[in-house]
Image 1 (cartoon, rainbow, N blue to C red):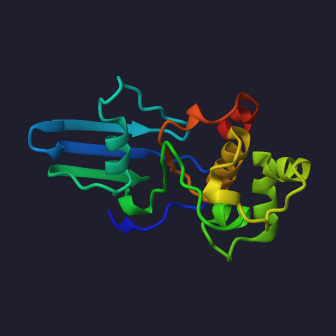
Image 2: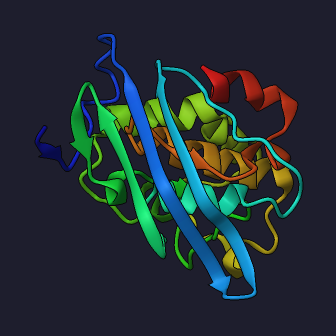
Image 3: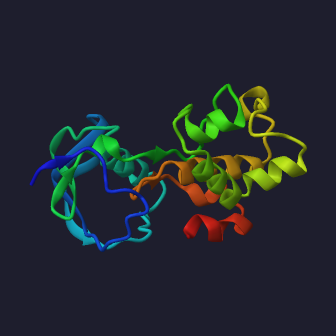
Length: 193
């Protein structure tokens, strides 16, 4: 199989199979505290939402960071393929449990400073996330600066920014760490769609 750096477009809804293969993976932050020891997994997934569950401190976030290429195994191998083509792990976006709000505008934070986003797509993402409606209610604009690096954002504002950010990624695979902890129930259906 050849390595692809990007998945097919997010709106390519043809059937696909995602194959995840971890072979004898070891990972630890320090030698006395192994997170994974000789961990192996080989599974195929269909499109949809896949939840990684486990007890607190059982390695869920570490697993996602390994999957996204943010960490490398100490030993063993990890691969992900899409319809039998290897995916470069660093092409998978990761949204952390506590998303960072950057010093900039709402638009900067939603787009990760990517000025190449199509306006129609961006507006659709802002609408679907509820951010455009929320900013209108707050008498703000997508071009307004976020005050205090987001410290003053309400939970709903933060979740709307993050949801817009997710929608703008245009990726078929996105690793989201404990995302539902800050998404209010009224945006949950949009998120799951």
